[in-house]
Length: 608
Image (cartoon, rainbow, N blue to C red):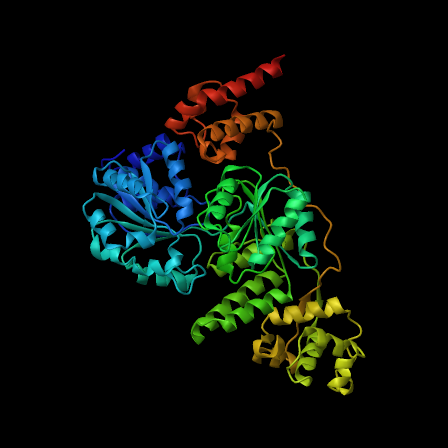
C-alpha cells in the first residue's frame, strides 16, 4: 500500500478498496488532500465523525509509515487490530510490549514494512525513538486527542508539551493534529504549543444529532439510573460515569445485583484488572462500564447506546467528549445525567483547593458555570451546547429533554430575594439546610442558638417546601448569585452579581422542578421498522462467532450499521456483498461467504 499516488482518485480508491466506504464525508476529502500533498492540518471533528480516516488514508497514499501519537496505550491494540483486519500493516510501540516484540516492530519500521505505527507520547520524545524515526521513511505525524496539549483543557497531558519537536526535527513531514473538543482558547494553545501556525484549520460542525441529551435533578440517583436502564437500555452496552472511586464500586455492585453485566473501572484498580474489564467492554455486546473519567478517551466501540453521568462533569468540554462516546455508529443513543446542589458545591470546593494559579482557577470556575448553565437552561440544550463551541443550530433540535418535554418555569424573583436576604442576614456563615430552616421558620436548637428566630427573614418562606427551597438555592448557585465558602464548611456567600436582583432592578425565571421523577418512558426501537429481527439476530450471532474465534471485538468485523444494511439489501452474491458500506475488499473476501450463507438460509425459510 506504499508509494505516493498524488491524485485524489488514489485516496478515494484507498477509501473504497480498504475501508469499504463509497465516498468521503464532508471535510474529510479536503483534509486528506491537504495532508497527502504535504501540508499541516488542525482538525476539529466530533467523536464518530471520521477523524481517524483523515490520517489513515494519507498514511496509505504517501510513501513511508504514518506515525500516530496517542495518549492511551490501552486502546492502541484495539485500533491496530481493526486496521490489520483491513489488511493494513499496523503496529504499536508502548510499555506493554516485551523487549523482543518491541525490537521486532522497530525492525519492521526500519525495513519499510509498516503503514501505520501508534506510539505513546512519552516514548516518542525519547532520544532513542527519535533517532529510530530519523532513520525511517515517515509519511506523516498524527497527533490524536490534541487538546491534551492545552493546560486550559480538560484532559491535560504533560508529555504533549514536547511535541513541538516534531516540527523542529522533521520539518518536511506533514503533521495533522486532531481533537473532538476544543474551545477557541484551547485551539489557540494547540497551534502555539505544536507549532502549527502554518496549518490549515478544518472545523466540522459539533452536532451529534443521533444523541438525545437529557439532564435531570438528582432525587434517588441509583434508582433513577435503574429505571432508565430498565425502560430504555435493558440489553445495551453503555458507560456510567461517577466522580469518585467509591461511587464507581457501589454503582457497579448495584447494577450487578439488578442483573446487569456491569464492571468497575478506576485508577485504584490493579492495571491487569482494568485492562481485563476494558477488554470485556470492547469485546462483549451488552457490558456496562461504570467508571471515573480515567476511562474512555479514544474508545472506538461504535455501539455504545448510552452514556450516563451520576455526577456533574467539571466542564462542557468534558461532558461533550464523554457523551460523544455514545452512538459513534450514527444510530440513536442517549446522553443521560442527574445532578444536584451537592455536585456544584463539591466541584467548586475541589477547584478552590487546587494548586493552580488564580487565573487558572478563574478559568475553571467559568467553565463550571457554563456547565451549570447547560443543566439549568430551559431552552434547547443542543443549541446551547453548540453555541459554547462557536457552532450554531438555527432551530431547536427536537431531540433533547427540553425540546421533547418543555420545562415549566415560574417567576422566582421574590423567592430569590428572600433566599439572598437570608444568606446576608445570617452573616454568610451557614449552609443550605440551616438557611431553609430560617426561611420556613423552623424552631430548633440551632435557630435559637444563633438568635435567628428574631431575623426579619425568619418564617417568610413558608409558602415553599424544603425541596422547592433547595431548587431555588441550587439555581442561584448555578447562575452565579451565590457561591460556597470552603473555609466555612460550604457556607453560602453572596456574589456581586446578586446586587441588581436585590435592588429590584431585574427579575428571575426559575425552573419548576417536578416533585417526583418523570415516569414517562422514552423507549425507542433500536432497529428500523423494515429490519427483520430474526435475520438481524442471526447476522449478529454469525459476527459473534467469527469474533470469538479470532479473539477480537465483534464491531471490528462489521459495525451494526453494516449488518442493518445487509438486512435491508439482502445481498445474494459476493459482488453485491462487497458493495455494502463498510465492506472493503479484504473483509469481502474473508467474511462474505459466511454472511451470505446466513442470508440465504433466512431467505429459504421465508420461501417455505
